[in-house]
Structure formats: C-alpha cells, structure tokens
Picture 1 (spheres, protein in one colour):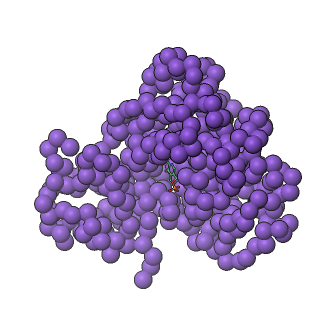
Picture 2 (spheres, protein in one colour):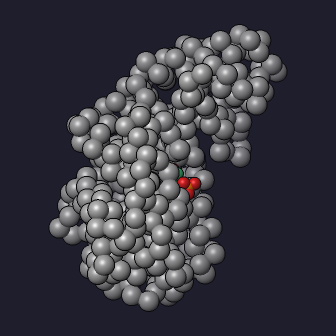
Picture 3 (spheres, helix red, strand yellow):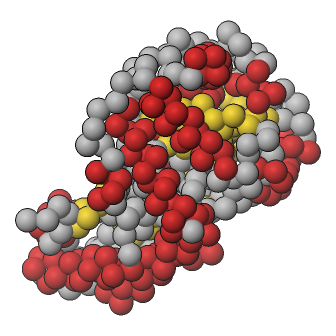
Length: 373
Ligand SMILES: *Cc1c(COP(=O)(O)O)cnc(C)c1O
C-alpha cells in the first residue's frame, strides 16, 4: 500500500529525492557537513534577496522554537511588542511573550479579516512605548494572508522593529527584503520549502542581531550565540539535525529546478484553485472570503448534516489515501485542507474525489454549515 498524501501544512508530502537525501549519516564536526550547512544558509538568504543585509541562523526544533528564539533574542526586557491578532499562531506569539515576561499588546481582528496596516499605524502612533511588531504573514490557523509589505512600510516609518512569522509563507509567497524592512523573518524546513520537519531558521538583519549579545533568556534558543558560533566554527552549537539539513538541501535543489518562488507559488495557486472548485461543487462553504485566502491552506465549515462527524470523515478520507487537518477555530466547527507540499492539481482532484466518496459512505447529503456559522 502506498503512503497517504498529507494535505497538512507541515509535516507535508515530500518528494522521494528529498527523503532519499536522508539515507546517509553525517558527522556534525565533519567539513562536508559544515559545507552543507553553509550552502543551505546561503540558499535560504538568496530566496528573499537578503544576503547583503541579513544573516541566516538555523536552529534545531520545530518552527515555534525559532519564533521563541527570535522574540527572546531581539526584544529586550524593556521592550514591548504589538501583535496583530487574527488567529491561533498570533496567539501563540502572545503566549511566548507572556512566558518570556515581555510586555505585549494584542491588536485584535476577526479571524476572517486581514490585518489592517492603517490600524497598526494608529496603534504605533498612540503607543510610543511599543518597540516591535510581531506579525504572522500567513495565519495557518485559517489560511488568511496578511499584507506583509504594507505593514512593514508602516512599522519602518514609525521606527520600530518587525519580526515576521513567515513559517507557512516563506518560499511560496513573495517576500523581498531589499524593499520590505524586516528585522527577523522566521520560517522552517518542513513547510513551503518542502523539506522534512526538524529545523527552523531566522533571517535576521546583521546590524540588529549584532546588538543582541547576552539578551536571550535561554541558552539553547539564543540566536546571537548560535550565529556567532556558526560564524566562528562553521558548526551548530549543539547536535544538529543532520538528516533534516541534508533533506532541506535536496529540497532546495528541487526548489531551484522547479523555478524558485514564482514557480512554487504558481503550483500552489493551481492546487488551491483546484481544491476550491471541487469543494464548492460538493457544497462546502469556505471560512475565508476569496480576497484574503492564501494558496497555502483552506478552512471549510463543517457540514451541519447530522451524519457528519469529523473523526469518521477523517478516517474515510484517510482510508482513501489522503490526510486532512482538523480545524483550529474555537467559535465554529471547521476542518482544513492544505495545498502545499510535493502535490499537483491532480492530487487535489484525487482528494476531492476521496472526500466525495466518503460523504456518500457516511450518508452526508448536505455540506452546508449550521445557519449563522
Ligand atoms: C507551522 C507554523 C508554526 C510552527 O509550528 P510548529 O508546530 O512549531 O511547527 C508557526 N507559525 C505558523 C504560522 C505556522 O504555520
């Protein structure tokens, strides 16, 4: 039996060549592995054209480790962070800041509404004590895209620092550091770059990071220390996820061969359009308006039909070869379907067919949500 396709935003379906790159062992002190790390970092910096201004600091762990490292290293204990909040990952940033004991202020938006740059501007004008803004670019909790470029202009014009959780957007949505001022951009191996999970990375402005010595609350998450050690020795400070780095290198080779960011976005857009069309034909109602939907992950309202239960629905689709993702909204029942990973529009057509067959099997006749949802 073949492995199921993951319609989840990380871990996601990877290409066989990416997985094959993990079939050897690497010594973490070996020159060959150091060269691999250097190559991966250089390639990551190249994607947003950041090599002249930014440095790439890789970090062991899932994406959240890198977000926590960026906040803990860049925001001083006297700082205060504005967090535009339109979803679960924005609230994760607020939890991290609370844990670190850093002052924070949420700027709430509805979960189906993109962050408004004008509102960020007004908030920064009213609160001179705010030193940083922490923005989630694509809020994976729903799939909404926030207007990064416009917000970056506002934050820079007000002279504050910007930390971006670009976890589920980097590599697919365009981010151009030469004209989008960002102090630290955080992403990870196992999202739109289509590597396996296990390492995050932060593209940090060199001059900003250079000022952050000794600031981090944590030994292991200290990005400044990780950067300095890497510069001095070519090595990670602690045991690196060697196989993950090798897989990311292979994934980046594929990324280049595919045609880089523009080609990846084009494929994800096709996947996304195929999914939207197919689900609309089945009668599913998307949670987000099309104008703010990123081609990364879609949230659909759960059918109100009494025959629908997510665990059975999930299992039926799973048996047919596709792994769905539960919803992350507390207010309304939803589920999510990712469009990223080594998937093509034909795979999304297959997923829609599996969903259709599962609905028939379960006796779900209508996919409309509860009235008022
Ligand atoms: C995946 C993701 C993260 C990191 O989550 P982990 O569970 O630590 O991998 C952070 N922010 C966003 C927007 C994400 O999509």
